Image (cartoon, rainbow, N blue to C red):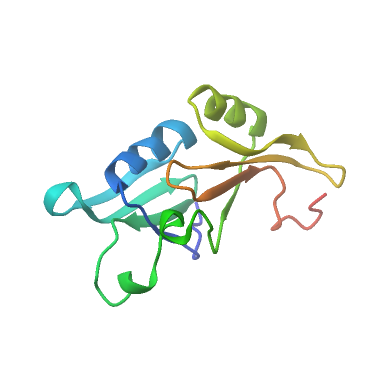
Length: 139
């Protein structure tokens, strides 16, 4: 299986709890967790299909100083993640049943594909959809 060469990176104030939530609600799998002091997560890698995200607790290292959580930006965010999946409605139903905050409900698009957008507990936006921009005929 080919792995994505683009890996989003984000910070979470309550990283350990949010990692568990991402695995339980969205279906990520823990690939690597590097714990720090006082319950902090120094670094984590979570897999989803052939993709991955990296995340961890806020820190004062050079790169950590430029990353912010939505809570630190009054609920705003500067990016979101789109994940291509096959069974969008099933994924949506699981997310709803587990209490995910839905931003854009499940919808079949006129141009093809279907999807929905939810927020994780710390305000990052995640869109799950069947539209695959890698397909030659993406409709």
